Amino acid sequence: MTTQHSYTSTIAWTGNRGEGTKTYRGYDRTWEIRTPGKPTVSCSNDPLLGGDPGLHNPEDLLLSSLASCHMLWYLHLASSAGITVIAYEDQPEALGETERSGAGRFLRATLKPVITVPAGTDLAKADAIHHEIHKVCYIARSVNFPVSYEARYVER
Image (cartoon, rainbow, N blue to C red; front, top):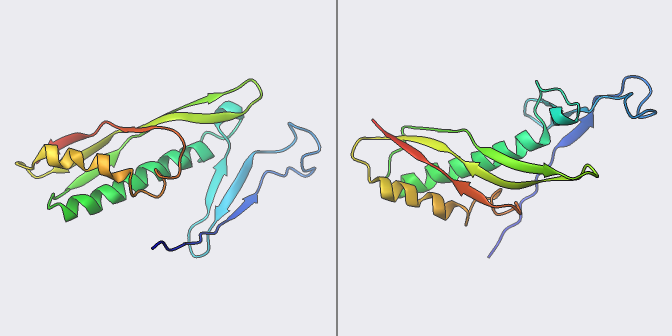
């Protein structure tokens, strides 16, 4: 049995300098993500396309969503498996390509979590969890590019 969930947000363009999109260079590629009851997220497009490097872009958000979903499932499955996680930090990387037409896509992503566990933890068991997450992670199940894992463990 499956259940459906609905999600919503408001995407509001904030880049009108006064004349809208009258000219290609006459507007900013900025917007806000507004979700009821949550802080507003200011965004811009990729700096390679003239975006503001100080703001999140869609590529940042997708990669961060993928890594966050993986982390949350890892913590859940580790807890269920009797593995204590003391700290978890990931610096994921993704490779994308842009065609001459401007069309782009992700080719692959690599999650690189550093996971701190108590000394004596069964690291093979801890590592095996990563390979189960793609079966349940909402985001990983939704993307159409390969996702790999290069986890490191710190025993404390």
